[in-house]
Image 1 (cartoon, rainbow, N blue to C red):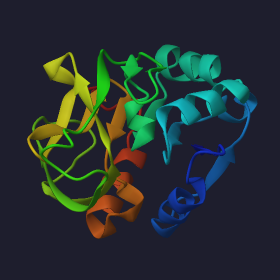
Image 2 (tube, rainbow, N blue to C red):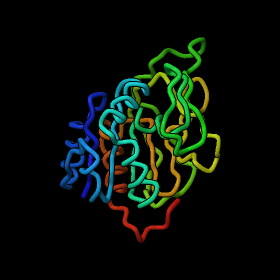
Image 3 (cartoon, rainbow, N blue to C red):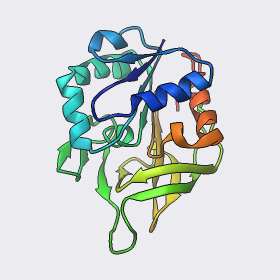
Image 4 (cartoon, one colour):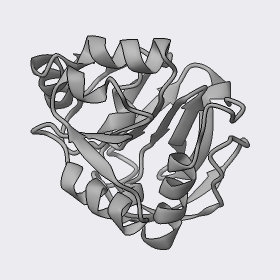
Length: 204
């Protein structure tokens, strides 16, 4: 079953619409029991890393996600802030995050670019994963970006005043800084590829 985590700082309905448009059935997850039978979990993100972490903690989701994603190896996709909180720390309100991936989230250099970055930006995918993705334009809304400590976690790269991580992958854990659900056909293709992943696929 596909589960979309619905929390007060997220945009779960938009992701649900995209998943349904692809022909999949999905359910909102609003408490830890809701993800026990998940085959794929999507964590949408809108707002700040701090608000997202606080919402997940209030829902009792953090330890449940660790059990399901890190131990049971259920496929996980974090979108926008949902990708940022995969890392150890965000300088946005000095927030401690999930720490599933090594690295931290930093603000774009405001002396070089306007923030937030808002609009379409080309993403170049730099490593092959079971979730097939093609270089294309995707939709971003972000003032912060992740700096992975492990180069092997970098899946896709874009440029905004310099190169930055647009997508990451480690094993069953995927993240996109861009909003796949708002990225037209390119975003739908990526979502479809993620939702087709099975336990038989070789992990990245």
